[in-house]
Every structure is written in C-alpha cells, then in structure tokens.
Length: 159
Image 1: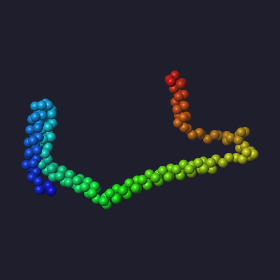
Image 2: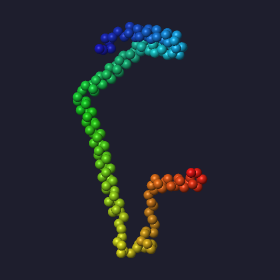
Image 3: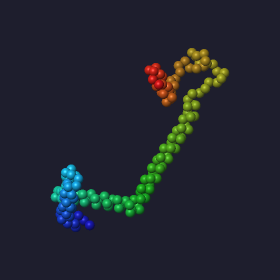
Image 4: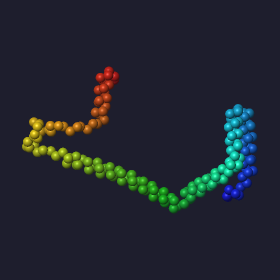
C-alpha cells in the first residue's frame, strides 16, 4: 500500500479526537500535568499531517521495513553475514597465532642478545667479579611499584 492510497486527513483527525477524549479523562483522574501531556501527544498526528511530516515518516518507515524484510528473507544476504562472521573469526585466530609466535620468538632472542663469557675467560676491565662496571636498569614489575607505595605509606605512619 502506498502513501497516496490512504485517506490520511480523516485518520489523523480521528486519532486526534480520540486522544483529546483520553486527555479529558486524564485531567479528571490524574491531574493537570497528565492531562496536558496527553493533549500534547493527541495533537501530534494532526500536526504531522498538516506540516507534511507524515509523508516523510511514511517513507522512512517503508524503507526500514523493506530493508529488514530484505535482510531476513534473502539467502544471499545471509551468506554475506556468514562470510563476515568467518572473516572476524579468522582475524581473531590470526591475532592469537601472532601473539604465540611473538612469545616463542622472544625467548631465544633474549638469550642471543646477552652472550655469556666462558668460565675460564678473564673478567672485563674495570670489575673484579666479572660483572659490568655499570649495571643496566632493571625492569620494574608491579611488585616493585607496590613495594614503593607500601614504603611511602610506612614512612607516613599509615597502614
């Protein structure tokens, strides 16, 4: 059914009159605030017809209904949805595999970065124990952060 096949003016007037009757009842039973709110809702159908907004609302509604029914009842669309799901699963799996390969590759790479001196080899210059003169900074862990916080709290007398 198209927009032009419906007699909109009598329909909008009827809905508005029914709404005004309900607003009268709302005034009597629930007070002025409820009555005014119901009156405001009752006037909207006639206002939509008189401003021409009703045809725009009809077009939007018909387009949405056509889109949803085309989505639900079209097997070609469902195959596209299935392919989208497969693509998402493949992205997730590739990310997991990339994370595993990076974790496996990081272990041997660290071992290659810091070669050990043979036991019989002389200590590097500047140290008597074989340790480098300047130690590289240690990586901080969450435990170190919490111990710093605990130390600060102890110094302040808290805890």
